[in-house]
Amino acid sequence: MFQKKISLSNAPKLSEVTPNDAPAPIRLAEVVTAPELPALFVADLHLTDERPQTAAAFFDFLSGPVRQAGSVFILGDLFEYWAGDDDTGSAFNRSVCEALRVATVAGVAVYFMTGNRDLLAGQGFAHASGVQLLADVVSVRFGTRTLLLSHGDGLCTDDRDYQAFRLQVRNREWQAGFLTQPLDARRNFIEKVREQSETAKSGKRAEIMDVSADAVAALLRSHGYPTLIHGHTHRPARHTYLIDGHRCERHVLPDWRGHAVWLAFDGAEFSVRSTAPSPPAPFPQAGEGSSE
Image (cartoon, rainbow, N blue to C red; front, top):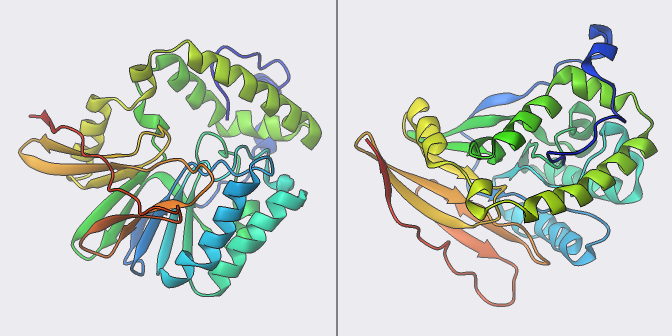
């Protein structure tokens, strides 16, 4: 939602925020055990009323493929931006929450992890939509098979300026201070940041904005060499690694551009699905990396 080299003068400094201003801790699941299959994974929809085709694809996704699924995992950046849980009053945001709630009431477990664009989504959003909130990172266990889920921006460690900024805006006291501002002021602030974010990205090398191989290896190693699924980079692919003698996979989810696309898991195999007119191709296979 934010990027580096921006003015935060409109947001309260940490010194201006008292502990009593901080919101109550959000209950985030760090482990999900035995969710229903098939499981669908999506990320980076960037929903906004300015992209009606993508929004329509999401509503069709919820009323179609999701109803045939056991569980759905949304791995961040569902919205182009989310200014706070009091933003559920807008007609568009309300329609998204209502559509999600219809799916959950129908019996589909929908899990949600915040991304960098919607990191302010919390208990209010969960209550309005019926989703279950996830930590970033979370382990999902299907019997003996473990999948590790993340939004992915925390793995882009080569961009040190962004990581410093990410740490700041995920600070509970900073968020509490920001949320004390009027909703319209927050929206205007975020709109300006979005513009500056695009300018900042144009001046970065592409590899800086991708995940770090060392960060990926360290994460997989620390969680027992599972399969990793994440979004954020908008570079869909299936990567394979040999880490300490263990073969691991990393699936990168695509962003949505006018149609729905998701990764499905039946408990044994992954497949790429889409509502695009032509059948989706499997995620491109990247070269194998190693970390011994």
